[in-house]
Length: 411
Image 1 (cartoon, rainbow, N blue to C red):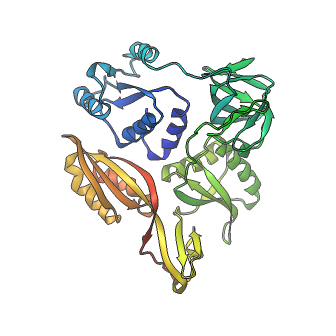
Image 2: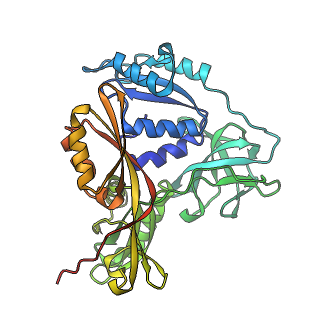
Image 3: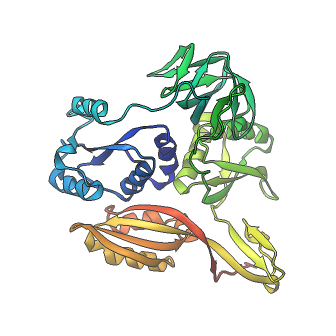
């Protein structure tokens, strides 16, 4: 079930890397959204078996025939392959479970090969340390084995291993194809990287599993404690938050006005709000967040390349050769009557139209290249209000491009 917001496509990608198949859930009243398409491509890239399901069929306004046509058009399946369901009233659940057993292939892997397991998540337990969740692709992991994380090179002893059911179930060993957990007493959150490979020290695997690429933060903001003496406590909280949110990055920052804090990188505005909310709700931290911005790249006349995170870091205009800013490719899906509004908004935001096409007679897809700076603040809100909530939006980063940008000093 694809998340409603672009900031969480990373969560989806790390789950897909540990699976053999996926259910493509499409809301009967909403139809296919921009997020559905981008996450479907992620599933196809991972060679997953896809079972299409139309959900919420008992809602008023369910457009079952139209949504079926959209799914057939998108993935080229037969109409009888599409399952109809409702999570609320339990319609079609038996059929979905049967279909998973019939259509999704069993895990493949060689139990006699060296251990090769992919870390897809981790959680912090105050008594046991960090619990690492993984999927075994090859080999067997036994309790008491000496293990190594390939990318960091750090070694540990597997004090407890087991499989994940509704809870954690301890086992003497986990085999190829299992989704399990390992407890090694790790206390430092920075030692566990989502996407890393676990192997044994005695018979290591020759290559790491092709995980998912390192996530690149898109929006940056400063987070500072309200009380300056709460800085160390905030640092511990940030470490714990990063454990199961590998997309959060942060580094130390000092401000003349706010003292010590962190410059944090987020996937987007919603991600930033959620981190702030989690700090307050889960860790009782009261924090100040600065205005979000993006990073620019300045090249001086001497050929020096400077990363500009803050206007104060901008080189003198007389020394400046060029300045580049990050661009994204935005994909919007809406009703045809809102094309004019979307075009106007995107052109105001320095967008360049790349493509326009009809997915169905009632759904149009627009693709624009736009500077990330222009969508950081209120683009999504404006898009929703201009289309009365009928537009869905997704984007992925492109490259840095030269732009006509100057620093404005306010006297």
